[in-house]
Length: 273
Image (tube, rainbow, N blue to C red; front, top):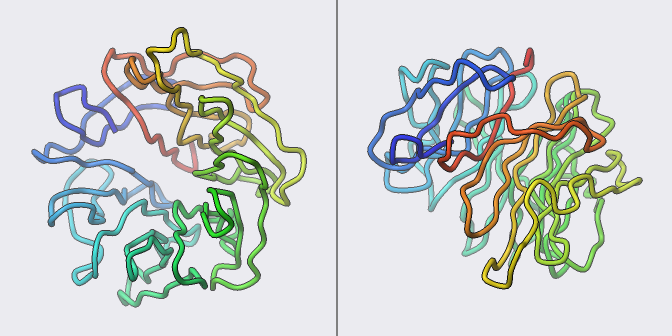
């Protein structure tokens, strides 16, 4: 998503940042894109139908359709299942955010969150489609959990004093990358998919807080490239624009991928890069 043209729209580009192209032109916000497994469609969040609704379109921006014709409250953050049959998302339920999945063909929805009076967000499917990683505040602050794709067998992966959020799996299923709140700045972290070997791989890069006038610094929405060797994410301080960066998964060779001078966030990568 980028506001290069003065409005939040969905754009696509090659994985090296070339051939950048705007594919939505709706006058309101379009954001949170997610590629279908075959690369032919994109699910995204949009204000077209009253704010925070999920749409599906062809990869060139044509044939936009609403995913859920009837929904109670807002629904956001669509994530395709690896077999292309379901989309996971989070939506309002009794005043909290809960994770659901919907069958693309039948429209049948299932609530996966198994707890009331708390919020779960940002679902991410494992590459074999058997598990979903997500963030939950059920234990006091945002932490990363995984569950089976039917909502069973909940396992907590992170346990930190500050928030961990927005998980994304590697193509091998062996690692999860996520954002983490560390010392007034949000960094990109990586861990094994069982929660072990948690590492902070940006540690304030590429921009660190320079003065007290900057309230925070964000490294957010990290995703792996399809070969699992690189990570793409957006970064910026509270007083600067958000830019898309790319680095090796160990944090080396960190460099801008997109640097238009406008805000660019929420990258999503096709299976073939």
